[in-house]
Length: 357
Image (cartoon, rainbow, N blue to C red; front, top):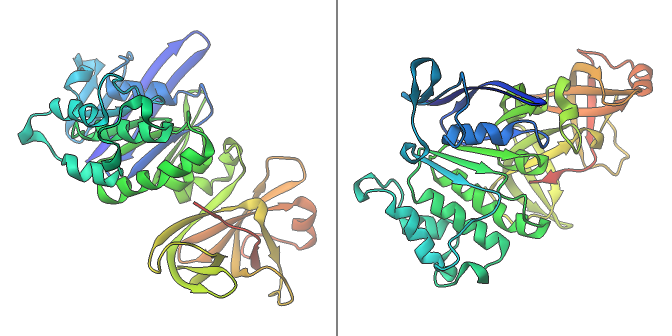
C-alpha cells in the first residue's frame, strides 16, 4: 500500500503543482519554507480543501479523482488530523476528550486501544485534568492521542510543534518517536524546522514555491547538493546506529556499520538505536591519516562528488565511507584546489561535532 497524490491549484500569486508518492509506513515529512504549499497539500489529503484537477489515493481506495467525479468528504475519510494548536474541548477533561475520538469509530472497527495510546503518550496522570491545566506539550500529546483513537489509516500532522518553545519540543519528540516505532499507521508530517524533520522522518519531500524539488529516503535527499540551500540551518547528513558501549571521560560509542562514532555521554542503554545529524560545516578533510589531533571521529573516505556550495568560494563535497554511509563536507574552494580534491580521491574525514537527534 502507498499514498499517491497529485494536487493542482492556481491562486493569486501562487501555483501548487505537485505529484507525491509516499510509502505506507513510517513518517513522511513535507518540508519547506512558510507559504510553499505544505499545509495546502495536507488539507487536500484530509478533504478539507477540494482542489481542481486533483487525485488522491491511499492503497486501493481513491478518495479524490476529479477526472472521474470522485470526492470522498472529510468525515468519510479515515484520517487523523493534528493541527498546530491542540483545539481540545475546554469543557471536557482529558479522558472525555479522548473518548470523543473513540466514539467516532464503531467498536469493531477500532485498530488501537485507548489504554495502549494513553501509555504510549504518557497520559495516565493527566486524564482527570482540564485542558486549561495542561502545558502546551501536554495539550498537544492529548490532541495526538485523540486523533489516533479514531483508528485512522493515515495520520496528518500540520506543524504540531510550531507553537511550543524549545523545551516543550524536546519533551514531546520522544513520544512521537515511540509512536513511530510501535504503531503501523503512516504519518505525513508538515514542518519548516529542519531539526524536527531530520530527527523523525524516514521519507522526505522538499517543497518550494508549490513544486516538489526532491523526494525520497531522508538520507538520500539530504545528500542532494542541488537542494542543500532549502535547509534553513545548513547542509547535513544523517548517521543511524546503536549505542554499543559507554566509555570513560563521559563518552558513549555509536556503532554504525563497521564504524564507531564517539559521542558525548548518552543516557540511553546499550543497544538503543540513535540518529545523529552531522553538519557539513563540521566535517573537514585530510589527505593522510591524522594522529596528533583533538578530533576523535576520523574515518577513511572516498570523494564521490564535488559541487558548488551556497556561497561563492564554497564547495560541498560528498564523502563515501562505504556500506551506503556518506557524509557531506563544506570546504573552501581554495582548500579543494590546494588539496586537489576530486571524485575518486581517497581522503580522511574529520567529524568535529555531532548533533544527537
